Length: 543
Image (cartoon, rainbow, N blue to C red; front, side):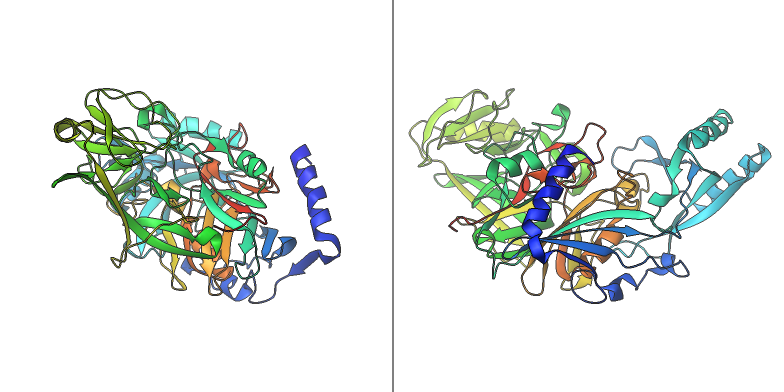
């Protein structure tokens, strides 16, 4: 047991006292076996996994953390060699590879493999129950062998590669059509009717700073913290730590939406929470003239996850793709927390009343209580023509849901966003294509991200208004394999959520209890520094 885990165990014993619970939940409640016993088509005929045993810790009135290991001893995952199919990226037009191909490709490839002395198997892979993709067979994969160790599979893959094939070494426990043998989950439930503290999305005072979930939780003294939305991780894609989707802290927008994507709206310090697909617009006004802005707190010209008008190669959201723009305005708040981007274009520094303090070349920093507008291309020319010292520049920010209703932000309100939606109105509703995490016409894009088991962080709201924050470890950390998007949706519904979304996952997935990390992040270097978190804070006066 690690030092951190020992600390958490000791703390949990104190918090639990005589109220400790070890229970198998038979029906309803946090884990409904009725839901777990309703498998999709790929699971029919598969031995059912036993109901998990939950350990429940009450951290404060209205706040519980529940942990379990979901095991299926009948599962027999192994290592295998997958032959990759040639593909063309629909976004870039470049040649690439996909884990699945057409029937004609699979049959021809299998025949070539057999001629080379290999024994291939052709396996159809079906589409998950996404709301906006085709149904039936997604494609076919071609595999060779079943191996007890990764080393043995890699040795076999070298032989297949030497014969002229592109290969990958895969663990079958990550396949959606095979049962997982182990999934370690942590769930926090916050009941606003009895909880007297606050819940907030936060960048901890600097949008462009990365910090681990547990370090922010420890600094703030939070009861529970989880990682939040997608963010920039490479200098080539913008300023690290900045969000690549919509976010707001304490009522102030800190980034704009990447198209219409799922968001968790935390209102009035956590008294209410809801999930909705949101869009955002920002308009800069100079007298009777106005110009749209396409970003907040990001590098002009670099649009991570795309989803903005004028972005190329796509104005639609595309997960983990950086689009570009040569003509845009970007707004910076005083919580940006990093040197302002430099380069061609212009900028205007606005005081708290919106009056232009200075205008000129891009760079410097955002003064406390001020805002900065930067422009490149024709938008930069517009800004240079209208940003005159002493004149007022107005900024109008509007957030709307898909029904067109305006989301008004005030003190104590937060937004964290990611993708995609998992549940809507009590039903599984994964709009994977619309939110840019899969492409039905390009199986080289998003397959592993969406359809393969991964570490994931999820958030949802149940019918009683309780906020549910959940994590599952993946990539075999402590043996756990993770969830597909479909499994994440089924899991959240089993917890009682009626609306839910997928937050950032992979190596970012983290949950801290009492400032101590309780899950097993998948990065080899340990817990990842992230761009934002959701924190459940005790006993503070609500705004």
